[in-house]
Length: 357
Image (cartoon, rainbow, N blue to C red; front, side, top):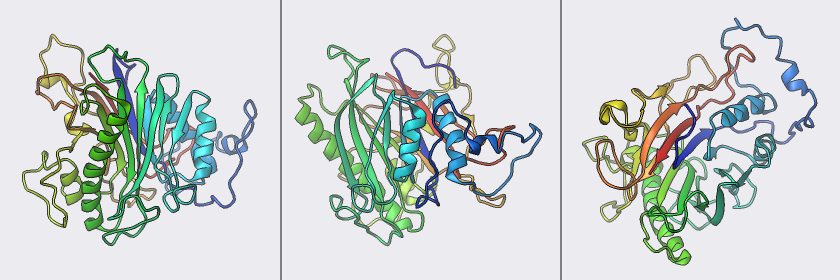
């Protein structure tokens, strides 16, 4: 993806794969020194084909964060991040970044995080919340609907310093990072309802507390590994069936009263075919691979289960007129760097969308 345009925002979602050796983390080498984890793999010739098998976090982290830096993001959400991994990522990103999140097991540091990272030169954190994907969203560690693991969502509200208070656009943006259950389809469908209901209610309460003059018009971005392909209930409920004509099954809660849904940036991107040729330059096709999950094995079944999605309250679909946020660019980044280290640095791929008002 090229450099960002004026008044744009580049967001990403990345399941980084948890550190299986977190009980004995390998410290980062001091800046300016040669880390053995890099040097040990520097001799691979460029012709070395991609190899399979999960490698230690101590080797994956450098390649993974290098891609985050190269993507030139403003905000991104992560999944499966343990506390030691977040410390590594924060260090490798440098002082220009801040993040918020809690461990899903206890609401502190226990278990995996779904954190939100943001550029602190552009954004000011004004609200931070966590809720659980269960019938009791405010209870730390709670589980529901046959989910195999505790699942969580992180919601932050950021004030965009690039937008002045006098601007017609809201100076506040809301970002949600989440990770849905990998086994229970029922839990994923219910998680979609929880996301739609809780995000709408919490955003409304936050904007009231902030004294927003035109509430309900701020950008909402959902960055997640939903473990739900688009043919399944979870995805369909999240997107309010706009990309599938048939209402999905397997939900027990009613979604009829919900007003907030989400536009999948994969479909919402405004391509060259959607606009007059005289308008701004646009992608002719989506960039990168279709699938966002690759696994570490040659026999892994790939799928598109990671999303960056925009709240329907302020987003425009292709061909839709009016004021709001449009997806200008979309890409799925490969999860390996050919020629230097022949392994995948995660079993998922970084999904990136650039939005513009």
